[in-house]
Length: 412
Image (tube, rainbow, N blue to C red; front, top):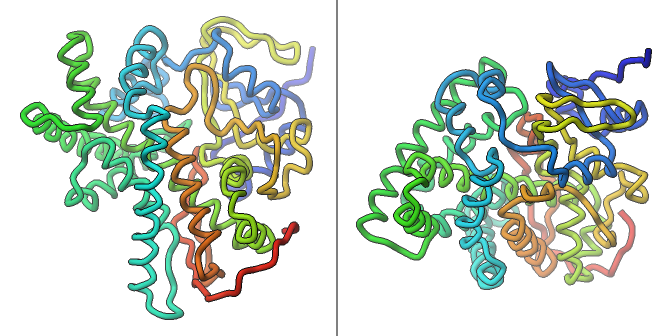
């Protein structure tokens, strides 16, 4: 009999502290690892990129999976309705409606608006801090920027955004591969509060339509009676969350990584055009979303083992992005890296709906960094927000110091 593959425990503190060291061990041990009950874990780029597009795998899970993952309650029902956890034809229908609010043309038109918001937020942060004062990248920029942008797209008023924030943060817990029992109540409470809030907005838009995502979804609701109100509300909640979580983590990663690699920051400031490939490198280097899961609808074979229907495949995006079989010197941050076939936005029909929006916002922040008359330097301890699924930050304190335009550098 073949020896059992190694075990991967996503809740191991070592994974939260330094997942890439753990991933390297998984890849060295083989192409398949054991996960939690009923789960198999994939860590190699070749396998992950292929399986993301495999139609034998789905994103629609049986009720008992959500029951096991989040426990009975509103978050469980919420996850069953959102576009992320649907397969065709429901996924095709929902994604088609939502795609209208994330079209390439709209993303291009948003670039100036996003750049203006970056300028505003950084100016306000510097004014609050005062000369030589400390800013917090997460609080002052990485969170408010994507929240402002996605609220504008969805139609959430300015005055409500501070109230929505804490519930949106708690909602992140519901998207873990497994939600610890002690965290489930907060996730369920967040879903309930956000549903009530969005439901009131939907009523308002029904009376006064506007040029936003809620109004677009309401029009689809009127045209397609099968698209019920509960599904509409839950998908607005999901898009609000998805619209800021990935981008908040991306911006945080960019700052944190550049603080640790001043040569790369100097290179960016000497060559501002590198903002475009730099975004892709930060997505690869410390993927905002570390893993995604697929439900096995038909048996698949991986490394001579058959993964039967009814099992869950956990695809480690963060590991695939550091696979030396696909990336030269993957542990090195290189904002000039080309090509950069990272899998941070997933793939196939479930490729991240807001990928283009995250890239627009990431580029705007990096262009600000490239052209700013000051350069960020560390001003305290960087604190992560512990999470298995997300590479998130709680605090990144920096001080902006006036600096002469650096000479172009090429090393970290």
